[in-house]
Image 1 (cartoon, rainbow, N blue to C red):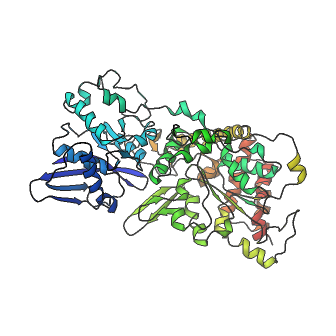
Image 2 (spheres, rainbow, N blue to C red):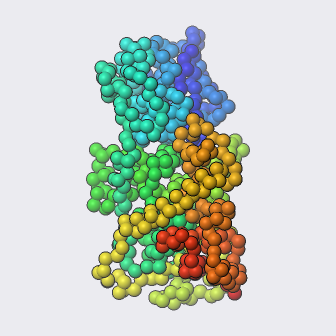
Image 3 (cartoon, helix red, strand yellow):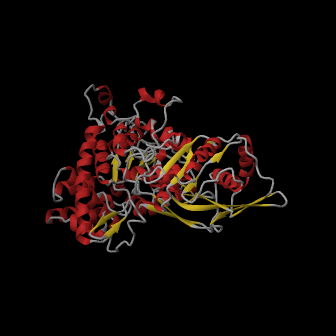
Length: 600
């Protein structure tokens, strides 16, 4: 019996799957067990044709294949390659020891390897489990460049894998006998030199993926839109800057054609640059969802003049997401499409927007069920999907940008159009967005239509890069502030994390406490109540202003805390240590829907 390692995906994490192959004499039967789905079962014909078409003989015997652990449902086509390797090893076509190898890939009938989903989380799992070598399809090569601590071989077809292992037979199936000159530290943030550069094994050298440093490519990030192309709308631009600096949710209210969508699309260009950990998190989610490709990793970062060049067949994607995701689902999207889950347990739109932006254009047009499911991820930064078979947690830390008309006709309060809606119709339209959801949106901004003078003005507007520098300066203040909080308190939200640094290589350590990056507070919008008490202290004058607004607008407790967080962000943009009355005043003016719904 042969045991070949492969990977499965549960939620956004990978786990080891042992593909056990047992070939015995008897009636020719191909039996596959271990809760495989239809795609895996149909792989029998792909595996048989691939082995035959590279010149080997498919065994005419009793073949039993088990996918362990047998109690977890296996999905997808990624098990074609490990099953084929297991059969080839059982028949003696491959004689190498497979204990330190893992395989993932879909086979075509002629033996070519096709792109599969979930390669990045699978390789991260392989590093965590101490696997030394992994074979993946050539089409997944780019996303493998950012994982070190493991030798990754990107191979185009099964024949090349067979030839590669024939060469490895000279080392008794263990490349470490002649290739490694010392112990290599298994740390995916440690990009060491190529350990195979002195070997004469041509196939090994040909297919080995060389790690790439994130710092070497992060400057390639480009944006197709820029704030300098938006005329006027200075209040909205200022609000976007505040939202970006503090990680706040924002809703834009204005008539049709006022530029709400364009403003939202420019928002990504002023967000802080992604760290390697954030890029890896987002890339992992898109890898699982199958959306990691040219459209996600290249075109959104380039000016229009370079789009055609980057979509040429000879240009490869970078394999990692450099700019924060921008997801804009249509208002007809289902709740499963937004939240994730389903039969394949795929991440939804809100998880694909993790570390980025979720844009809901014309928010009242979305179904009530879709809007209400946003409440948990907006509060917790993650979403839990519970089904009969399993409960899955997806990351969902995003900034929500929503847009809406002020009334059904769109011209209530506009200076360029006349509203024909009754007060009852206006209130009914705005009430489609519930009070609890509005409380979770920090900034409510009124955007009126631009005038002809604004459009014809030739004055240069402020570029996104200039705004982004101010935003990053404010974020640096927040990062320093909350890092000091963790060091001082030695806990996260009063509860100490017990995660081992060996089990979580990306975790940070503060005075002996291990805190996962996804749990740490990075910006003002994520502040906990104890943090607010420490960093949002108000002077008597500020208290008087906020109390007056709280009573007149009938604000909720959540709206109160949101105003404090926004005021803290405005103070950070002004490089002020304490919140001043003008900061509180500005934060209150950015709650226009509270004035409409609650101000009587």
